Every structure is written in C-alpha cells, then in structure tokens.
Image 1 (cartoon, rainbow, N blue to C red):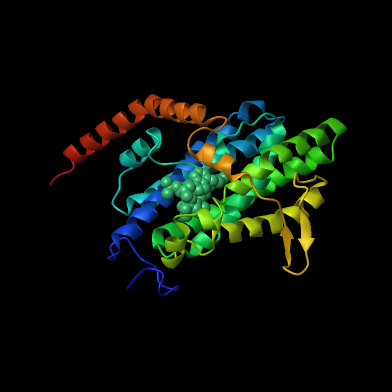
Image 2 (spheres, rainbow, N blue to C red):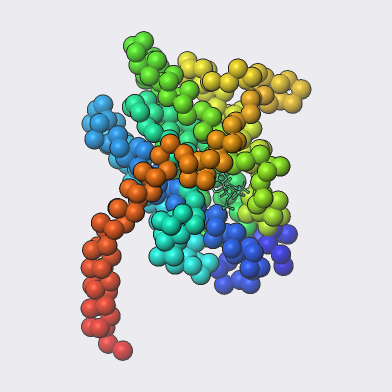
Length: 303
Ligand code: 3HC
C-alpha cells in the first residue's frame, strides 16, 4: 500500500516502501538531525558567558538535549539503510543541509532567549505534526523530542520576560534580539508552498501533515499573543488580526534571503560548517578507541 494512504498506518523499517519515499525520509530526517547538531553552536557559545549559574545550568541542559535529538534522528535515519558516516560526510561536504536559522549570529544574551522562544517555538509547531508522520521510527523519535522542545521554548520565553521587564537597557536588548530573529524564524518553515518542490509528495506520503505556509501561519498565530505577554513588539508593520480568516495577517518573509542562506551564503554558514568539521576531526580518537574496544570484546566473546 502506498504510504500515507491510510493515515493511521505507519511504515516500519522492514516494510516494503517506494524508493522515493525512502529517499525523501533519509533527506528530511538527516537534515533534521544535522540541524540539531549545528544548532548546538549558537547557544553553546553563550554557556561560558551565561549571567548566572542557574542560567548556565539550564543552557547546558538545553544544548545537551539538542545533541541527543541529533543522535536520536541519525538513528532513525539509519533504519532506512544509510550510515552515520555517509550522513556526516553529506553534511560536511554540503550535499545535505541544515536549518537556515543556525547561520545567524548570537550577539547578546537576549539572543539565547529569542532562540528558545522563537526558534524552538517554531520547531515545536513544525515537529508536533511529525509525531504522526507515516514513518514509525521518525514519528516515535518526535514524541520525546517535542517534550524536550517545550522546556526549551519555556526557558527562552522566561529569559526574554525577565529582560523585557528589567532595566531599559535589558528591555532594549530583548527587543533587538526579537527584531533580528523574527523573520529568520518564519523562514524555518521553508519556501512558500508554491515554491516547495517536496511538499506535495511529502503530504501525499504522510511525511508532512501540513504545508509550509500552514505551519508558518500557525506559528505566527501562537507567537503574536506571546509577544504581547512579553511586552515586546514584532518587526512586521503589516501584522494585524484578520477577523474574517481568524488568523493574524503578516508580511512576506524575504524568501530570496532564505534561498541565499540555504545556498550557503548566509552570515555564518562557513563558520558553522568549519566548526562542525573541526569537532568531528577532533573526536576521531574517541571513535577509534570505541571501535578498538568493541573489536577486543568481540574477539573475547566465544563463537
Ligand atoms: N533551512 C534549510 N533548508 C531549507 C529550509 C530551511 N529553513 N527550508 C527549506 N529548505 C530546503 C529543503 O531542505 C529543500 O532542499 P532539499 O530538497 O535539498 O532537501 C528545499 O529547501 C525546498 O524546500 P521544501 O519545502 O520543498 O522542502 P521540505 O518539504 O523538506 O520542507 C522543511 C522543508 C519544512 C524544513 C522540512 O524538511 C521539515 O519539516 N523538516 C523537519 C523539521 C526540521 O528539519 N526542522 C529544522 C529545524 S530543527 C530545530 O530547529 C532544532 C530545534 O531544537 C531548535
């Protein structure tokens, strides 16, 4: 049966599946995993500079969560017959992507709050429907990841709420971070549906349950009242409630900017990838030691 035909059925690793379905899943799950791993960098830079031990401990936990999400998703991708080495080589050579949002700099502590509130908030909107994805291992990985994302989003909201209700300088820092991260967060949902080559087929296969534009709208509808609760404004002069549609009307993200960042020409693409490759190379000794240990244990284990 074609995946997605029966919305309640899930495809498992040993089930027969169309080659295109498998390829699409490897592409999406791998890039999701890459996003989690690269996504550790923007906030990781602030662990040593967190303003208190409490904030440092929370941020360390969050960054560690992202690493776990990446490993979880690589494991889900490997159930489709690919290998961790192949996936990492695809990331390191630029054959596979990671989310555009992580190519923007984190200039102040308030950016850590904006990433938690906006980026993890957008990730939750995108990931909750994936808990019902037609591919079993991906859907199950999403259940746990979404639970942890909720903590990520709340801690970011709390950072911004504290700053926004602090000194005028702290309020200004929070507003500046939201001004810089708002539009790139909307771009996380991908190009407009009309320019999305994968959405139609991914919807038919039950990989995506909603389109890019539907999820983007859902995120804006959630974020606008939250911004009001934060006492911060959103940098979109077109923002207004549309009573007839029952949604917030918002301006159009600069999708040419998204295309540039996706093509590797964003503010920090080169730095993020270089850092990732260096970390992988620096960790080679750990992989070699683990492989040597596993070989010794296998040699000791009788027949
Ligand atoms: N950044 C990078 N590439 C993007 C992108 C973005 N924001 N939006 C789209 N693209 C790429 C797509 O990967 C695709 O390229 P490819 O065919 O070479 O893979 C191309 O642009 C066209 O886009 P489509 O809309 O046709 O592609 P998809 O149907 O795959 O939709 C997506 C893109 C919405 C990102 C979808 O892949 C998806 O939902 N992925 C799972 C969720 C995910 O990866 N989120 C990334 C953030 S993870 C995160 O934020 C971690 C959290 O802890 C902070």
